[in-house]
Every structure is written in structure tokens, then in C-alpha cells.
Picture: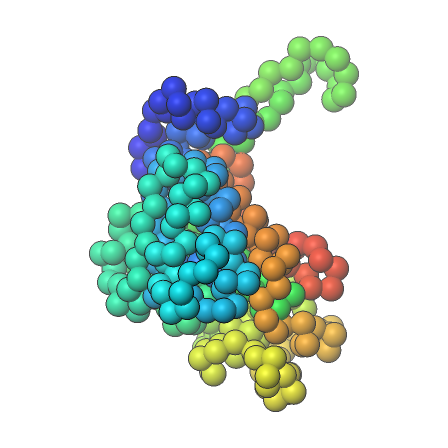
Length: 333
């Protein structure tokens, strides 16, 4: 991706952001072409934030139809839209009103119909609410074309995001004190640009239950097991086994299934001190405030990834449904 020089109108519109993260970062944002898969609760929050940030283009890929629940919850939908219309097309007017300078496209094809070549034109792909096998397939496609990938989901009060930025270089501004000067003292300070690099593992080494002892040991070595990481594995395994998310209409049955999967995972990894009994009933539905929080976090990760400014989360963000706080975790070989 090459930087795109800002016009006078763009510089005026993005003045506050330029003051925050600099002209170079804003020019990189203006050159970024992002694909967003899924524009329901979480997806609409991500779309809002990255459109306002000033990327070049956003393609919204979602073959779903507008439902009554969407009309109640999705702020990108206008009132009185006929049920059954394609949601990827119906969100465009309000999304465009957020920032007329961003090019918006709605794509109503199923994500399963997309081949590897479809993804190579994007700077970054962000996915929500997709089937489990598609997560791994899309990540592999992105790796073929050196496209950055971010996946996130909401399960009731619990949410998470997992990133695969592959080989990612970034910089951050640090204040350098003059010789003999102590932090907090007045005097001249010099801001320097510090460059660094991160290497991310593919998601098939992070999200799939391991088949080998080597995979198990890699996750044990690279992460400190906690309840939320186990919850992530349990919910993705539930989705893989049942091709759906836990449903409130089947809460009793699904809680029993979640507990069974949890026991299998704890035994497989030989995890200890895992207590999830207070979590299971929090995994149902889409909670709007959680969508807003996680959507903001994921949008910020998109901005950091495409602008190459500030270190990104490496490589999992977990939203705690009990303490309502965020936690970062590094998982993988």
C-alpha cells in the first residue's frame, strides 16, 4: 500500500485526527481499502468507526437479509426498510452520510462463494459472524496475498478479537529526555520515532483445537491459560460442532453442551484453576453495549494496522463479561 496525499478538503475534514496520529498515518489510512464481512451489531460499529477515520474504501460483504431484529438494533439501517432486503445494500446510505469521502460498496454474495483472488485487492480484511471453517480459509487467503486479517465476534456479554497481521512493522513516537534530565522535569524534550516489528501466527495455530502434542505444548508455552481464553475455545468449538451459536431458546440444553466441551478442552490442555460456572449463561445473544466496546477496539486495531503507528494487540483481545474490562493475550507458536 502506498500513501495517498491528502487534498485540502481532506486535510480540513481530518484535522483533529491528523493532530492525534499525524499526517503520515492519515495518508496511509486514505490509501487503505478494507473489506468488512458481516454488518450486524458488531460489524456496524466497526464500519462506523473506520469510515469516520477516513479510509479510502470500504466493501461490505454480507448475503443476509434485513430482519425485524436488525431494524431494532442496527443504527445504519433507515426506518421502514422492507424486511428481506439485502442488508449489505440497505446500510450504505447512512454509512455514506458518516463520511462522503469514503468509497462504499455493498456485496451480497455469500462469503463461501469468494475465491482467493477476491481478497488480494484489499489492504485489510475484517470479519464477524462467519462460520468457523470460513475463518481459517479467509485467513489462509489473506496470507497468500499479504493482506492483514482481523476476526472478532460477540457471544452475549462476551466478546473477542483475534488478529493475524503476519509480518507487521510499526513505529511509535517516544519522548527522549536530554542528558541528565529526569522524567517530569521541565526542559527541552525530543520526540523520536522508534520502529519495531511483530510476527503473528496463522489462525490455524491459534483457534483450532490441536491435533498434536507439539500444538498443545505451543499454546501452553505461549499463553497463560485463563477462563476467557478457554471460553473462546469453547464457543468456537460449539459453533464448529453445531453450525450455530448458543441460543436463548435452547439455553438449558446449550449450557450443558458448553460445559461438556469445556471439560474436554480443560482435559486436553491439562489446564488448571479454570472456573467458568458463572460464565455460561452470559454467552447468549448480541448485547449492544458489548458490540460498541468491541467494535471500537477492533476499529482501533484496523487504524493501527494500516497506519503502522503504535503496537497492535498481539494477538487476542478478550472482553470480560463479569468485570466489563478488556484483557490481552498472546497465543500461538
